[in-house]
Amino acid sequence: MDIRGPRLRKPSDEALEFTSSMAQDGRIARHVVAVNMAHMLELVASGEVDESVGGQCLKFLLRATTSIPSGSKAEDYHQQLEQDAVDALGVDTAGYLNYGKSRNDQVATALRMELRLRIVALLKAVSGLQDSILTFAKEHPSDIMPGYTHLQRAQPITVSHHMFAHFDSLQRDTERLLQLYSRVNLSPMGSAAMAGTSAKIDRRAVATALGFDGIMSNAMDGVASRDFALEALSVASMVSLNTGRLAEELILWSSAEFGFVEMDDAYAASSSIMPQKKNAVVAEMVRAKEGSVIGSLVSVFSILKALPYSYNLDLQEATPHLWRAMDDAVDSVRLISGVLKTLRFNSKAAHDAVASDASTAVGLANYLVKQNDLSFREAHAMVGRAVKSAAEKNQSLRAFVGSGGLATLDGKKIHINQATLTKLLDPRSFLESIATEGGSNPKFIPEEMSKRRKQLASNKAGASRFEEGLDEAERKLRAKASGIAREVKSRK
Image (cartoon, rainbow, N blue to C red; front, side, top):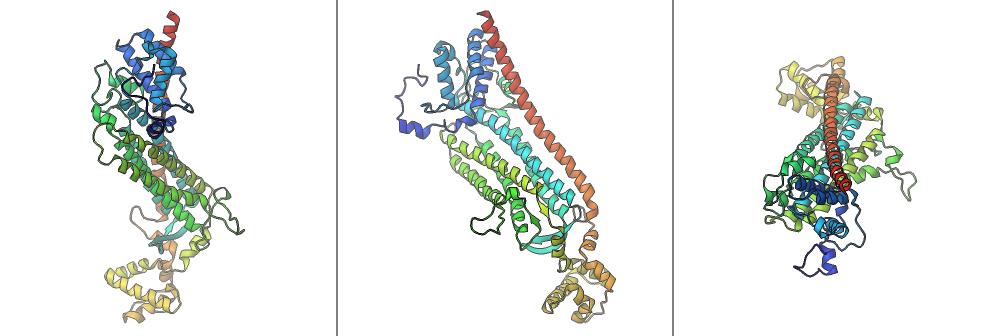
């Protein structure tokens, strides 16, 4: 029996190929089988389906292949699975599989089940990158490097301070992923096509069996909403953006113009013509994937725009973008983590970059405010003119001020002894003078590191809790299905 029924003639091969999702359904096949198991178990528990019939269906599902057959003429894996069951068991038995459910609620549920796994994978990848960041910071706890604004040297900072900034941006991504998981982990099953079903289905029991925390409250919203996909793509885009910023910095720092780092050969490539080249190709691809993930977000927004409730096949077109973006995000995070783990940092080059420039000038301005009864704006202007004059004379700021440049410029009796001047303009002394929480004073590093290690441990525990919960739900579901299937077999 063809389960599509007699209402319509078979679609043309061209139309079927155009509308079929079989090529993408391999991602959700295992979840479709699980949904059918949980649904059938509930039909048996409620008395809607005889246990012997349900047991045969469950036995089939336990053995069902989740590989997509080549040359299939099915519209999707949902149809293929049911057709295979009908062919194997007969319509009088397998015909109950779809009683009380629709492909609409089934696919919405399977998508959420697969997305849960992708969220966990991204959570674990981000935690891995955060771990690499903290390890790198620990290896260079108080090494000094330039901090940049507008890609111009601004003020000295420590490597740890810079790395903590990347950690914290990823921490917000982690918090978004944890919140996203709770919204994804709601079951649409029992919504049927859009209005619910008269079959006796305990939706919450089915949800629990599939590892969900609860159910979608409205049946129409349950089958037609894809904002969970948009939210996942949004968070993946932010993860990719933050990962791409780190990748961009590593690309810059590895250039001869900066010379702060050297990437391991495992994450670089040479040139086909220039034998001296070492190109940061992995970091470049991470940077490029950022655009691909954002592109998928825009694509899905465009697909969902102005769709009426409830289900439309347009929703099917959004799914490949979701999987591709989640894959790209996870791969990018994992790879840049590998780059960072094997990175060689040139502490001398980074320190030399700030040793003779004027990036500690604000320290001098602050000193003038405190010691010479000047407003900050007056002190700022005075130091700014000193920096300009020193540059015109091809002198360092320290040499110019040490020779009495400030007093000469402004006609005021301002004298700074050489020891004080050296300390004011020294990068490490500058850092040690910083008093505000969250600043780059090296003395803050141990406490800041400890705080972030605790956050990382909590992140890893959250991902493990989700993963273990899903594994346990799947184990219990299959065990229960196996029990009924064995019981039916033993009666025979």
